[in-house]
Image (tube, rainbow, N blue to C red; front, side, top):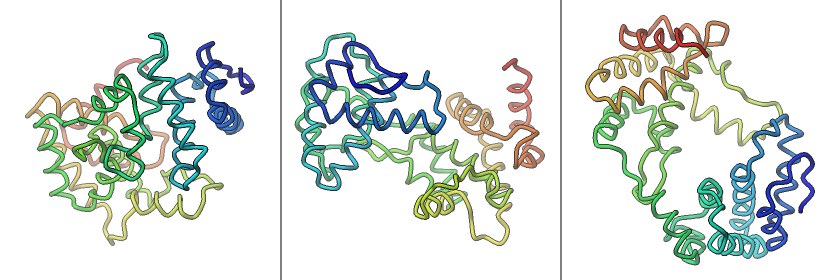
Length: 272
């Protein structure tokens, strides 16, 4: 079994890295880097490590690394042939970075066996509920500055916006607009490209950035009560992400309408 320090994985994982040695090497490197960066050992599940491996291998595939391509194909074959104890989380973690058919590198998807390909199709044949889709359209029409965030969260065969991640990003952006970016957790060791990408998505050159905050809050307030799925989305993806009293950007709480504030108060009355 590959030596990854405190994390070793199951007997099945040991078989996997013997069958696909490059996957084992990548896993060891990624796990060590994660632990060195302060990630807790409990996070090092097989699914989490598989996603790290898939992400790194696909980065190499896009750089025309044939060994990485062979390893991705071999991983897919192992998951196809694997015993039933191979969890859905492991298969999903492998697939999340595999291009869809028709995209660059999509021939990797075409090479998948029926079991793993069915999982890919089920995951990517995603459609938002009509009420949620309508809500997202209205939000983007009301606040066009959110479109880059929405585009960053598009996924699947139908290029749908992933509603929960997107609205969570919206909450982070609106807080960042009120704090001039101080609420963003930008690490000192980020590259300039990474830093620029975050600032592009979560800040604005508008001379009155609070105007966008008010527009978002007004839209969300007006949407409450019309549809249960939309209410749940707003509550869990936006309201729950708002800062606590000791965090930057808490002034957004004072800008909430009655419905949003009632939801926030209800959440904070619950024991954590």
